[in-house]
Length: 205
Image (tube, rainbow, N blue to C red; front, side):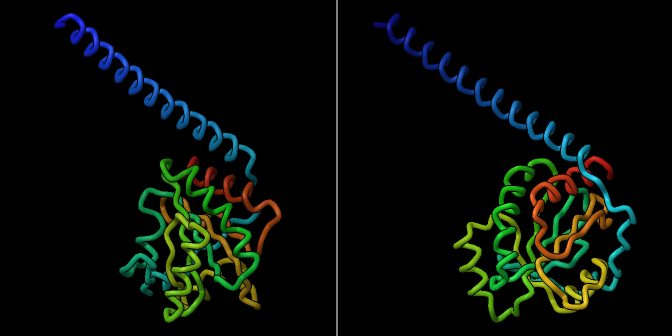
C-alpha cells in the first residue's frame, strides 16, 4: 500500500514538473517569436522622410477622462519608458471601426513588450454610455478615453494640420514621449504600418 501511494505521488510530481516545464518553454518560445517579429517589422519600416514636429506642449495642460474611470494628462499616457500608439476615433466613424480589429491585435501581440494602444474618442463626455457599449461590442482591449477638443486640435496640428480635422488619426510616440510617426485617415496597409512604427520606436528609443 505504501509503495503504491509513493509511486502515485511521484507520478503526480513528475507530471506537474513536466507541465510547468512545457508552459515555461511555451512562454519563452512565444516571447522569442514576438521579439523576432519586432526586429523584422522595425527593419522593414520606413520612417517619415521629414521628422514629425513635436506636439505643442500645451497639450499637457488638459485632463483626459478615461472610460474606466479617472483623469490623466498626456505625459501620463505617452513616454514613461513605453511606446504608445494613440488613435483618434469615434463610434460613428466607419474607417475607425475598420481599424479597431488591427488595434486589438496590436495590443494583444505587443502588450508584454512595452507597447501600448490608447484610443481617444472625439465624442462628448455625455456619450460615455454609448462609447462603453461600443467598446464592449467590439471587445476593445486597450485603454479608451475622451479627447478634449483642444487636445484633438493640437494633435491634428502635429499631424500636418488637416483642415477638415478628419478621423481616424494615429500617432506613435517612442519611450521618451517623442512623436515618431503619424497618419491621417485609414491606410490600406494600416496593420503593417502600425506594427512597423511601434517596433521601430521600441528599437530606437
